Image (cartoon, rainbow, N blue to C red; front, side, top):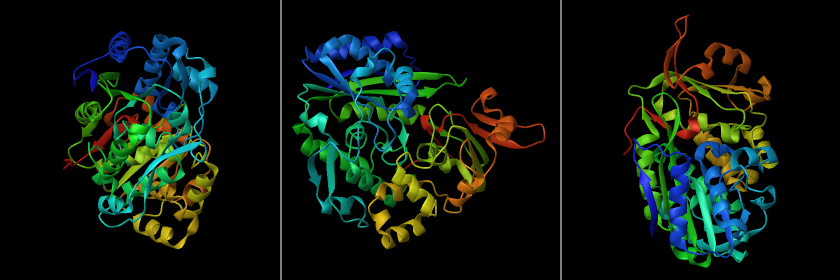
Length: 423
């Protein structure tokens, strides 16, 4: 059922609009005894999910007993990040998801389904796992709050991915990500439907009834012509219609078609949001379909201090590097540590350029040797900041006094840039 729907490419929802829409939907749900809110971490700071969670807490009062950031494999939020993103929500309500422990398995998607979705490339069951609180916490409402935006693993972020990946376990995360990588990220990004989405839908349809009532609160956020972020849509519901409306709007406002392929792209990664290449490589994922063969992507990421936010993932990235799809597939076949961390293997595929363009990484706290060891080039972030001055420029085409032309993307996580039509 769709409880609230408002949005268009011209809509601009302010805080009051979001509050009114949320409250209208919650009124339709009636009184609730015990509620948990599942929202994003700081890497989705601009999603407006923090504000909506704060308003849900104001609406329900003491009945909202838990806030569970959907970390997936990301590092836990710091107290400062929780305060910055979630406002006045009491710190004592926050719970930390552990993707290696405290899980409930709702069921398993059969291997023959995975085989069909992967076009015969994979043959394993997929466990539908969530944080055990969701299954065993005696809630009568799960509010899943987040942003729908083009995504490299599933096509469009959020909806049931927020639960099965954001609060999922090792095998569920690893295998779903590997399915997306093997199928091909450029066949997935920006699509409403994908093999990974079909996997999540299968699990929702067959195993979702074992969870309390799940209601999705989905936003669509995009930059306007002046680069200012605008909330273009709010969609609240408990089935796929809610997601589909949000995803169709995201296709309109979050996909930038650049015309001809770009030879020189510069991406700015806000240091308050991006601490690792695990997240910072969104600069590669979201721009790769716009970059010309032989082109260059410069990633200015002064907050990046590590490769993976999990120690074992960090070790594996350092060991194998971004080696290209065929090499990574071979390495998975030959090495047990990658077989046991298919999500890392997927990440290595996603971050590889397949030799089609080059990546110059400019991290604040990784050395030249570290960056070059994973098959990127290195440049000093301070020098690149001084040269390209992303804070003083808008997204789009620019020309420097020495004649260098480049295309600036100031927040790759907010969209997808492409020089081709999506099928």
